[in-house]
Image (cartoon, rainbow, N blue to C red; front, side, top):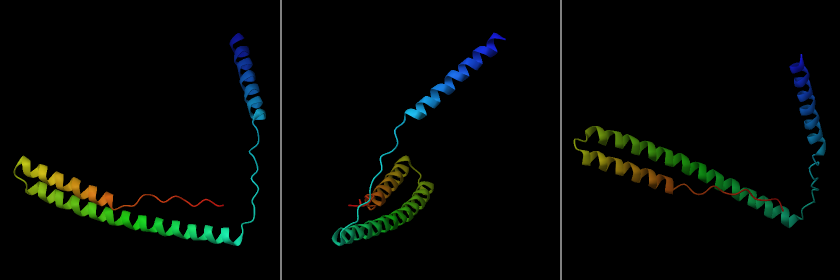
Amino acid sequence: MKSGVVITAALAISLGGTTFSFAAEAPAPVVKKVALSPEQKAAFEAAKAQFKAARDARQAAIAAAKANIATAKNNFDAAKAAATTKEARQAAHAALKAAVGAAKATVPVKPTKPVRP
């Protein structure tokens, strides 16, 4: 009997605390949008176009790098299967790592989104 009263009291305290914490939160500030001048709008549109072009170029480079890595992996598997010595396997692995590193180096950095003035 007493445990039910304790649980009810604990539940009431926890619910009271949560409603108080929700009421104490401040609303998010409202940001007013300001009309852009024609020069600002043109510059922003140009920046957006440049960002999209850089993003597309990066995606194309990633696709090409994936193809190069797949080719290097196939070459590695063939060289590893044909290798008879430990040194030959190590050379095949080193060639794979070099090919993967070269493919990763061709991918440009991720472009940053333009900020609206």
